[in-house]
Image 1 (tube, helix red, strand yellow):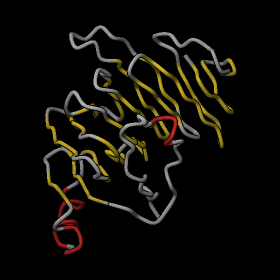
Image 2 (cartoon, one colour):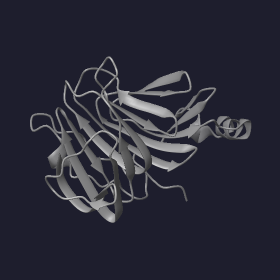
Image 3 (cartoon, one colour):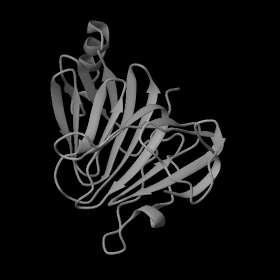
Image 4 (cartoon, rainbow, N blue to C red):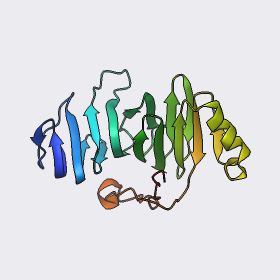
Length: 205
């Protein structure tokens, strides 16, 4: 069910508080918009200029599957909340059965920004996987070229923060200058375990 909506849509219709969301629905927000949806043990928040499609729960684990096409998704999952976020052929999910809160932003077809605000995340892409620890924020380059990998290896600033993979690169960005990821933390956090402050995941210059 939609719990908050501003400049948001369900399909072609304007989203309103109390609207019911169904499998296959395409959700989107305009510039300056926000859309928050509550599922059992899960809360999703679409920030401005975001497009997402609701999948299904047919997997053996009963995961809610969502396809993030553009923009920024923030999800908060309780202990029993199972979710898989697909973005650019990558998959992001809680790494364990634990309270989890994450920010995922699609920068372009080759880059994601991921912040594990609470709990660890499991990231997988074309058969390779990596765990993102709680509190870590990464710039993720998909299918990096040999030139991109070589540049990172040659720069001292990245030697301790770039995890090298055949199919993707993890670049630690920590708290960076740039455009903040807006989120109404008090509505997504559990009252007994507030999370750390959101870092500012910078846009590319």
